[in-house]
Image 1 (cartoon, rainbow, N blue to C red):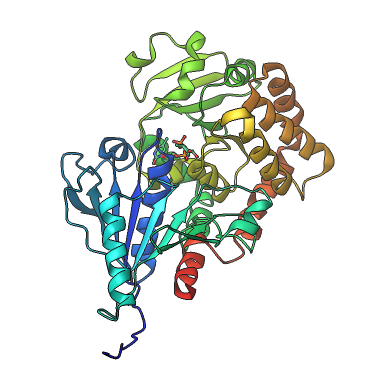
Image 2 (cartoon, rainbow, N blue to C red):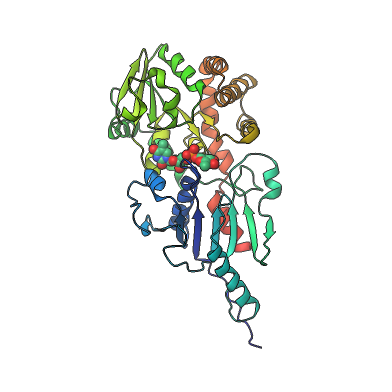
Length: 401
Ligand SMILES: Cc1cn([C@H]2C[C@H](O)[C@@H](COP(=O)(O)OP(=O)(O)O[C@H]3O[C@@H](C)[C@H](O)[C@@H](O)[C@H]3O)O2)c(=O)[nH]c1=O
């Protein structure tokens, strides 16, 4: 029998598989993670994506016609059936959001596992992880890291992002909070960005609100309220789903709107935004006084922006998303006064349920609590990250597997 030389696994090659369900969230999260692992660790990442056209909206330099290309040091391969580029078994394989790896990939992993078991090779099967959606619910702690034995003898682990120490953490690149702090301490960065985005007539004392939501009548209620504000308000809205519920305020169809276009009603100016890359989107959130965000990735980035925000959570069957929203709000509001917490929760819940009257009332009630909300928003990222982001916990998890 040949003796097996056990070498320490270098764990240097990681593959991430991402299926774009709809919107930009799945690709948004995996793209951030791929970039961060490449930049901050001696890891070479290949990201397999089944919809390069959607991806190109948040990575404008991507060519959707190419089956393989490199951006920011990450190899990006088209995931079609069969795979158009050969698959080399990596050290770590991540299937994002239970996207189900291709059968031939699983077969290659299985073959490697068998060869190792039979002493024909000293290379183990890759560490196989399923990266789950983010939730602040308490059950996440109990499920994070659990193994799941597959029928073919391979082992897959569930990796749950989360807000507490016993979860997989939150994606946040090293230095993000410092970069944001510098940005926010120099007003000219904000004004330069608005200029670059083609946004005109925004005075430095005006209130600026970014809007990246799904459809909800509550957004129209807020806009109608902002129209009657005592000082100018600018709502910055990319061409997309938020606009579907603002049709009564638009001069033309959504298709005809152009980035840079302004629509003025009373004290409110709606600005149509161009889509930017993720760095540009972060800078936008850092530059606004208030952000309306959605899904998973923009929701986290609004937290790192240290500004108050509304979270329009991705709707799920049987209103399950409202339970997830509630779990997050309970954490986020734990250091707020009872009054501010009450109206902030009401604002988020009524925005998500589309209750116009409650959204209107909650916004008005919060106006004088904004300093407290701002203070909480500044402290929240520091407390929540507690020096351990998702990538560093993930690398540690893999090393211990
Ligand atoms: C507006 C804008 C967004 N973005 C990026 C930021 C994020 O990475 C991404 C948007 O992703 P999210 O905020 O998560 O929202 P989303 O609604 O696009 O994605 C959703 O997709 C569903 C399938 C998932 O189940 C949800 O959990 C959620 O992730 O787009 C840019 O890079 N530039 C832009 O100009």
